[in-house]
Length: 555
Image (tube, rainbow, N blue to C red; front, side, top):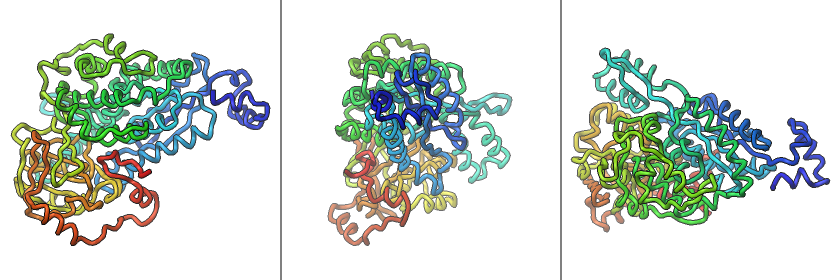
């Protein structure tokens, strides 16, 4: 074990002295040292309760003869950064999270790790770190937030952040009073946990189960429930077994595991951001998982769970229906059930024990919401390297959309124009220079898209961007267009009025311009200059690759 380099070497007396200083007793030197990597933060609702989870994890570790040491890393709340500079730091924080964990773990004598994430970029950041460090580990997330309850007209209705973001658009067109907007603000977020629908954070936490790195229930047990505390305790116990059996992340995160994760993503209509984070995880594990394979999976895996923003169910409903194990049971024919897990058993053992408790929430494969998966990768002369759309959230009549481009070179420009209604029904709003390099940081375009939804324009307007989408987006909205405008992708050549064609069934995203005209326009553009001139974002923009490659750093 790694800790024995310090605890068993007579020359390491100074290090053992420092361990005594933090509370270790001599008997601890014969036990495994477990790093509890906590992303607790008082400014992030999804993370504000993680100290109590960490305590349960540590109790579980101690109960099985381990010595836990809690350490911390950063957490960014995407919703807090939406529509402002803060969102530029969201995706880049994934790399910092992984790097900071690498530093703390390599510098200290941990034999195993428990990762405690919750929100959007912390989960994939910790996944990258887990594979990079390749120490026995387990994941236990903070869990999803419960839906808010709002009483309207004598009836109680569930709401969450989708409601509040779209309410802003409804308010802007004068169909909602300030008092009504404030009431939604008061009830949309009832407490701790990651946002209550199948958005990015909950998608990624569910995928830790599909990957085999977490105990059943990790993705769906609501944050405030006592079952979450018990799951944390059991995760602390389980990591001791993982250490004893020396089960390593790179043995678990294989091509089969990544495929399984995408299969589950398709079945539950998961976030478009999975198409950035899972390829990045594969890259960290030493192999590539091209976006073209995502369509192959989508072709065969039906969409059987319709949670918000695509449907009306919340994470708490999926949990009561049996959670991710129940989903995997229903789609077991599409999974590699021999895939290894931190239980030391194949995925099959988890799937066979699962029970599907609610057929309204988890449909049968023979009766899906859609015969194909919830995500689609489109290609074409506007997206030679791909673009992603949450096809599960697109109405059937909008699966083919043709309209003139309305071009904006930043999110701020687009939001200002949308707020002033400077667009027409049938337009394709183009938001460019918001990619990983161009933003920099690939901001989520939730503010403009949710305002459009609140205005009732989500079925009349399409949006395409080289930025990212929030998991809350719905409608004909395509993102991660690659190459991005800053890399002189075709998006940079667009002008107002150019006709855009989005054909989701054919997986095509094109502009009705000749190859020669696109080349001529691109050749006439001045060199792109990184917007940020100092600090981490400048370094990030200089190193980051395309979203189609997972927005990883260049080797």
